[in-house]
Amino acid sequence: LYSCDIFSEIGERFLVIRPKSIASLRSAVTLIARNGFSIVPRGAGLSYSSGYLPDEQRSVILDTTHLTRIIEINADDLYVTVEPGVTWESLYQALSPLGLRTPYYGPFSGRFATVGATVSQNSVFFGSAAYGSAADSVLSLEILRPDGSVIATGSSASRFEATPFFRNYGPDLTGLFLSDCGAMGVKVKITLALLQIPPATAYLSAGFATAESMLSVMSKIARTGVATECFAFDPFLLEARIASEGLKSDIGHLLRMSRAAARTLPEYTKLMLSALKGRGDLRSSHWTIHLTVDGLTSPEVNHRRSLLEKMVESQRGEVISDALPRLVRAKPFGPVNRILAADGERWVPMHALVPHSRALDVMAATNAFLESNRDVMREHGIRAGYLFMISGRNSLVIEPTFFWPDAHYEIHKTYIEPERYLTLPGHDRNVSARDAVSTLRQNLARLYAERGCAHLQIGRFYPYLESRTDEFSALLWSVKSVVDVGNQMNPGSLGMKRKASEF
Ligand SMILES: Cc1cc2nc3c(=O)[nH]c(=O)nc-3n(C[C@H](O)[C@H](O)[C@H](O)COP(=O)(O)OP(=O)(O)OC[C@H]3O[C@@H](n4cnc5c(N)ncnc54)[C@H](O)[C@@H]3O)c2cc1C
Image (cartoon, rainbow, N blue to C red):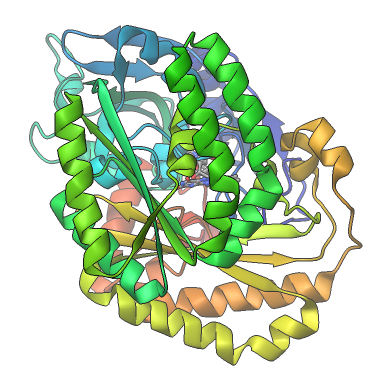
């Protein structure tokens, strides 16, 4: 299990530890470092950029999934402090009854994905249209270094009364450790901001004839900051998603949810009808966008929804059933069955964050790239689709996703629900197709680098360090040499490899 992520598998042999307390993690890290091993933190393992796959045999993987304490929920000062292995779903479940949630409140994989790992590689989805990425919701961190020392950041670094309520007290040392993919230290405590859950929500879905018109509307929506969530699909990926997860199971799920949450009958009926209607409606549209709008009152969210409708109409979009955003909100953290397609084929996404002014250009370049590789894709049975998201006011996420026939890894068998996995056809090991997908991903990542795109989940995949200026790289290396003197923290992630002399 530990030698693969969702895309890659490695043959290296290494040790794995799964500490049950921060104290034992701390003693283990000190011992590991003193003996010259490198330290590779891991959460649930649901990434696909080799972020926790060690470069070296003398490595120890730190599985943080048993560090699951919610340390403090502070409803007065609006923050929550957690250990790194807390999942987004368990955090959401602990906060919801108190009428609270974090601004960014998790990735689609949040049933298993951990808070510590998510802020370490950064992520967008729930809450991202309004509040940006996971890193934007962090107030303060405690970082364990290989020498066993712990650094608190932000207002928590006070030698007097340390309270993690304010991030930018002086230079932003919290930011230094975010999106680092574990290269700067092990996060042992994470403090996130809280907000009071807005009582009113409205939904909107719309279909567009072209990607261009849909992306233009997404940029408009992002600039206004009206939506809380905004995600979109091309026709192929939407079909694949409906097939791999099935609205049928969503409807069953709604039934259970509505009972559990004791919803009123009219609301429940609306959800059901909306879900059923969505089956045909969603399939017939072309490029579809799905929005959630939060606010304090129904008139407020309805007003916001009408603003969104106008934006949709301005690009000749058609309002369709809002079943999908309703379903996603009704139960944000569903199973992660889509890590294999409905026909058992393998699945791997990649993405680019782009400023609005370059979204259409990057989309056209991606399409042209896929078109120029059509023969190789056909030869190996590789198919591709798109997911899109808004991240804060400044950027769009374009996420091409590949499918191809290939053997499943242990990680697929671990995370797909057992009854679902039994229904999925297996495939033979298909190294040539996997290599072809790998080459496509690498070449597309290079194309994105050359267009100045940014990325989450850099890991060992996106060409990060090599695409930075000399000045930036030199500063980053100097910082690393101070916080991680022996270069033992996840060497190779962010492209920061160890020199032979450091082994
Ligand atoms: C079905 C599915 C849906 C997904 N949906 C989304 C989505 O909506 N949005 C999105 O952005 N991504 C998504 N992802 C990608 C991924 O699941 C998320 O980014 C998630 O946050 C990863 O969490 P994890 O616990 O699995 O991290 P892991 O894969 O275990 O680790 C990720 C990185 O964090 C580092 N790390 C882990 N713990 C620590 C720590 N305590 N200190 C320092 N470094 C650490 C690791 O070394 C590694 O580099 C999805 C993946 C799947 C399979």
